[in-house]
Amino acid sequence: MTTREYHLTQVTCPSCNREGLDVADVEYDAQNFGTVITSITRCSSCGFRHSDVFSLSTHEPTATSVKVMSPEDLKIRVVRGNTATILVPEFGVSIQPGLNNEGFISDVEGVLARTEGVLRFLASSLLGRKKQRAEALLGKIARAREGRLRFTLELKDPLGNSTIVSGKAKKHRLSASELNRLKFGEHAIAARRRS
Ligand SMILES: [Zn+2]
Image (tube, rainbow, N blue to C red; front, side, top):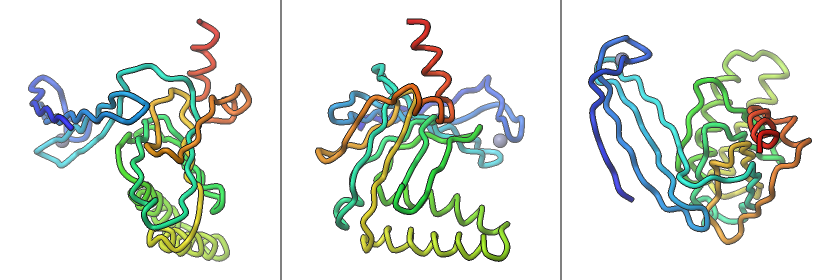
């Protein structure tokens, strides 16, 4: 991995409006995928932080998945582009990319940790039966993070900036109907019409 750090003096922080942001770009070579750059922007005044993931080569709209069968599988590298939807079908988990969505490079366990964070935040505003269901799901994710449950991790990315770095990972090109049901899927459909 190669890291480049620089300071953008002319750019205003989106959170506190002070001028000047620190950027750290990390280059990562993902096997059978090409070079991926993670760019982390930070503001030293207010602590604002945002991360993006870019792929240097172009990719098709792709679904990539891996079956997690053992604690070792939790260490499999995952590249999550900003436009990817994260799915764990066995748990009924589907996390769509939001407006301020972050791209990142992590491992399977790290993806579960982030998923747990999102769910914990959602669960805090739920009541009654919905809260019980959310808490049961949080329990499953906690067990999965310890390698005690088998599950499938799937990333559907209409811009193809996501991959799972493992010989066990399966990939397929997203179909038009899959794209129709995906957040940001319209971008890939529009690109296909142009070409
Ligand atoms: Zn700031």
